[in-house]
Length: 451
Image (cartoon, rainbow, N blue to C red):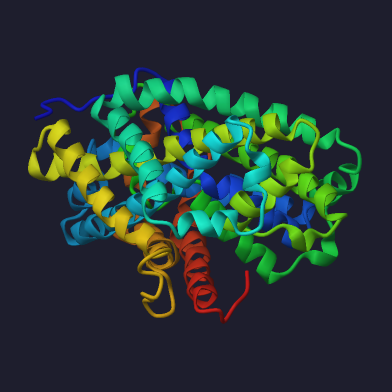
């Protein structure tokens, strides 16, 4: 049993760990697609404006809740307000649902990294390669097990020797790889048009959908309302300044997202002859479109290997943060040792992950309200619970425990320069924004709205 709560050794360790959580698959397979679909530069402009306002407010709120209570979300909300203790349980369900299928996708990434590193980009580029692979039984489970075991080993090593150490190594490496690949792609013949489209704002493309797409992407991209920032905040030293740390996490996360787009959008433009519709989102972009792009690219084997290594780094830092949010809750609630809590979460993740994998193979006929097993878990967690938890957190802070409870924590290390803005946002603006995300996500999930 842990008698004293671990803390990150310094602000850099905390920022890199939190940024590692935020920089996940969403930055690499959803951001470029949305940027391409909604006018490139204008989407970036809207996203940046939302990041420095809406994203900042939610990030500060969650970090402050964690540090103030020194607890995971499962217990933290109840300490802030006994009437709101149930929200902590709801918040903990989000990473519980996400963890198994995220690790399964992490296994797919691990497989593709191995394929690219061994020079098989031509095989991966063939039509049907990805769908044939995920519909088999044993191979996806083999790579899934490698990924989830790697995640488990980091968590069982603890906050400093596991999470912080991994983040200090992988996050700088991820940044270097992203910059290097972006430079390579934008210097390819024909990439100029893609770069222009991606960076120059087209105000005729500005619409309510652009705003909703940017808002939703920001919410998911920054690991908000998943319990992660509260958990990591509980390990953040009282000697450090929350406002500055939140800004640095935001900058790192946004920079990676922007660079990912700069890497992927021009590459697909060159491959497709300038057709922005060739840029799919999600698994289609990552595992079907991009291998074809790499196969047609000079030094495609090397670029493909470096790219999937980058994606693997992003996936593992995110899966570690998701698992830690659950493990920390079990330690706080049941006073388990880190070893026992980690083992329980790993066993759960393996069991549910196997079910998700079978959903593409031997159980592919199993549908839940029209969704595959993985897509159903993703819909419940990302489209419903995640925005719901975020909205209710703002309501609790804004009207029940009051914004001063957060502001006082932020001001332990100096003035909170944006406290008036923070109060207005958390009470009136953020809940409305998140309600819009909730409605649009549900409508999109059922095919009523296309974002």
